[in-house]
Image (tube, rainbow, N blue to C red; front, side, top):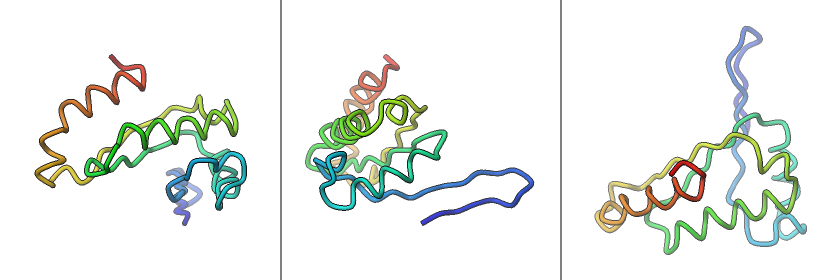
Length: 107
């Protein structure tokens, strides 16, 4: 869905559901979702800390973005890690944050 602030400023947000491998090649609803991203100025990634492999999740999204459009892939990006309150996720959070910073070029 979209959220658009009034004409006096603010921001427009576009919620793009998780992309699947091959989205940039037309698998699933990938191309339709990726087209929405073209109008964005910043991408916010929601990475689930309780995922089986959150680093793979991040890498997959980055791959699909690069395959689809390098301009989109080069937009400023913010990584948000959610579900950090789950004990197993909390235990691996320091290493996960360290590796995500490295992959995002912030180390």
